[in-house]
Length: 260
Image (cartoon, rainbow, N blue to C red; front, top):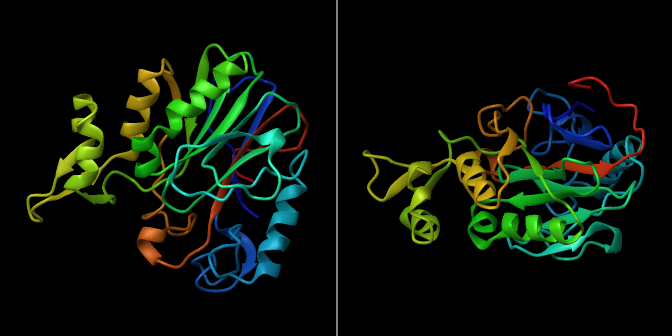
């Protein structure tokens, strides 16, 4: 498998985080790696061979202190304590202040947001597509972490659909701008397609996080649509696999390289 280690300079020493790619597995098309090889799909709900997905999850588990707290994501704003997750409950974010508990999010264009506090005592992971962002998933995640004692928070924005690829309608613009006019610069009207806009998920997430007092934000440099050799993309391919972004406290997983 090929994984990414977040380029997150402020990440505390007691926090660990990784993000998977589509490369290095055994999944067949349309869940492959885009380079005539097997894909590393981690989504059980997309139509892939379940045995392949379980194989990939077992390989991933070798890098982790525990089985991830997998969620059934519904583009909502519910946040759970990862240490209390059983099965795969419906939610779009999880947090933890317990060592060795792994928060996990699956994506294939939506924005994975990893969070921690500056002291390295609380972590969280949020699934932030446009519906989740508009619905308050980041606000709820920050609030839940602060209830656990987090003070200064840091964030990392994982691989998502880039600002030159995410075309949306006016209803998406209204969902953000009606509540916060400062969101308007995150949308660029397409003069060739009336009522269509290009949306910047990274900019929207940074704006929302800043409104919650989270200003130290890293990441936001990838595009899942254009980087076909690294990432799955629902917008590009329709039926496709899912990558995972994971974060946890303490535990030694032996991951030291920037790309592995």
